[in-house]
Length: 414
Image 1 (tube, rainbow, N blue to C red):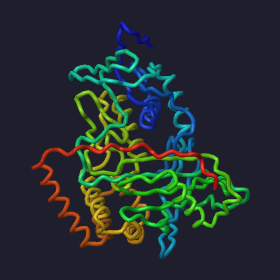
Image 2 (cartoon, rainbow, N blue to C red; image 1 turned 180 degrees about the horizontal axis):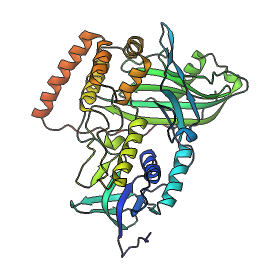
Image 3 (cartoon, rainbow, N blue to C red; image 1 turned 90 degrees about the horizontal axis):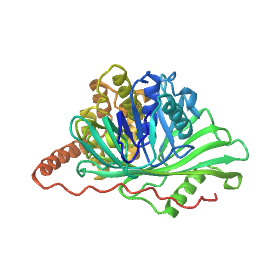
């Protein structure tokens, strides 16, 4: 691959902006589908490596991700104050994937693809409809036939409802067997609920002595550093775990947007956005990984077939509308979060609920899902959403709130 210099712009077929999860999955998919005849550049200021995040997702076993998984479970628990329900996910499974193996696979794919890496941010992106000119922070220029942009980007306009999924997790090492490695806790709503929002804990056990224990909120505002630690300590105690027999090996923090605001996946003719910036985050739950993986696979298949690298919409339009209604109902207090999710899992097969959350159900299945919710609050939320859409057309665009960075504090000592 040619070198990029100050005086000579680098001409490529494909430029990837950003190097996180979406770009890593895409590099692996390009390699997997045999796309080795394109000139590729990766523009990112950080060389990603190691364990900086954990993804949890559901799907069918037997994919190319299986060798990378830290753990998977056929059974999961959903708990409320009233009961604990064990769900059999057959034919699906719930799986945990840490970032290190994903970054390692992407780095190997990058070498096989003979991609050029530019360790700098992409400052400007100019698309003239024929080529895209990318100016980097270190003064270089890349000219690309297509740009696939996975950098965090704000939505096109403010949403009618804007929440955040924000969380902190402790990787706990126990001095004796205390976790059940055959079963994950998907959602545990026995945590104290915030005045406006939803909270839950979950447990992803790798072994009987090692697990990720996490506290998550869906709400408009972040907690303080001390607030996350207190919530996690409370959930640890709720699980009956003795802090004297535990050590915190790692801490994970994160913030994910939950909003019905639009994220344009095609901001210009030859620029395609992936990941959260391309609409891969499910507004009503914050789940992202499965849609991000689908986007990478669709782009790679298209390029292998000689087609433009444009994936399908991450979620059907009807799902985005249902998400907007559900977010509004939760935000305005029409339905309670624990009751909402409890009813979904109580009145539908677990496999249907999980496929719905991934955006791959049929309209008939979605009618069954909607019939599981409380009718009157959802009707009110639907009417309110429709009225708000009309107001949005009549008034100037509101400012888009920025997604704040995760609150990161000192490692706790449980």
